[in-house]
Image (cartoon, rainbow, N blue to C red; front, side, top):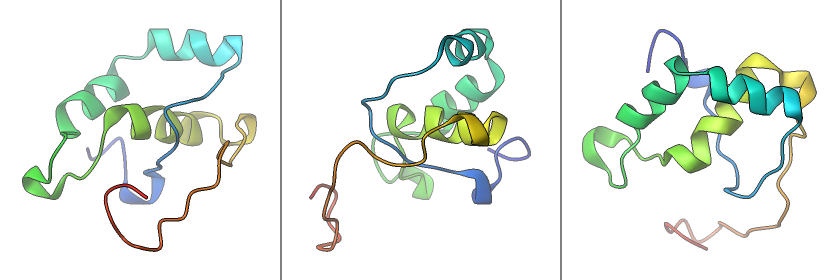
Length: 87
């Protein structure tokens, strides 16, 4: 996803979220990052691309464009200590 999305910028979040109007407008106007995630993220380990666009696109997008305008936490607690695909 380089050069626009560097590994250090990649984020994961819940599929459940809310956003401010300004973020909704930015999201609707975006095609560059959306297409990067659409073509890169696949629902399997193909090419070591373990990502899902609905969990990665918006958290990464807003962390890059407006890191001070987002809440940087999850709405739920999840124990991932077993290291499986799902808790």
